[in-house]
Length: 173
Ligand code: ATP
Ligand code: MG
View 1 (tube, rainbow, N blue to C red):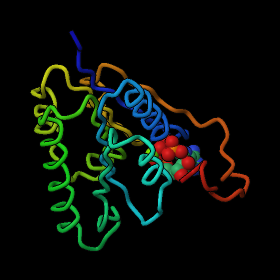
View 2 (cartoon, helix red, strand yellow; view 1 turned 90 degrees about the vertical axis):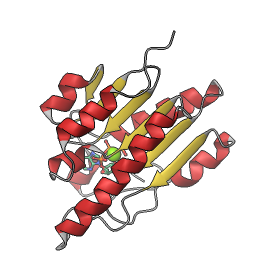
View 3 (cartoon, rainbow, N blue to C red; view 1 turned 45 degrees about the vertical axis):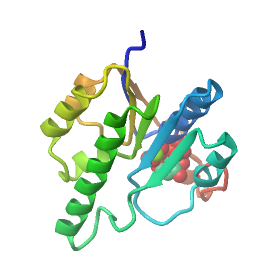
């Protein structure tokens, strides 16, 4: 019987989102469905948005971040949008339609106090027992780490940005 895992990719080194995308590809290879929900800031066009087309409808992707910049003047509106996005994510998790649900850059909702952590962890605990969930993002709070089954910290040793090499297609986005 499948044991649904709560998995967290955190830390300030590169690889949190791409590791989650790699797992999505792996699951799709078994014909399993994956839903990726991105809680991103900014307006970059990430390659995965189009790359998932190659997976024959097995991987769905939703970008929820439009409008929340995390630094916006209108924090009330950002918080409302974040909570709406979490509602959508929670519904998706509880739907049982996916083998794995990935909440990309989700940790920022806690970091910026846009979501109540206890309510959120409680809802995650009550998800269907077979449901795998992956959460990515820097600054994973201790309570999330405590509730997770698998936690990986990406630690930066070197990053090209530090030497002035700009973000490149297929590597950073
Ligand atoms: P990736 O999406 O490449 O797996 P990530 O999810 O670990 O990276 P994020 O914190 O989400 O990293 O950062 C998003 C963007 O910043 C990506 O373009 C990523 O390559 C880049 N990035 C990640 N880590 C670093 C770092 N230590 N220094 C500078 N840029 C970084
Ligand atoms: Mg990321």
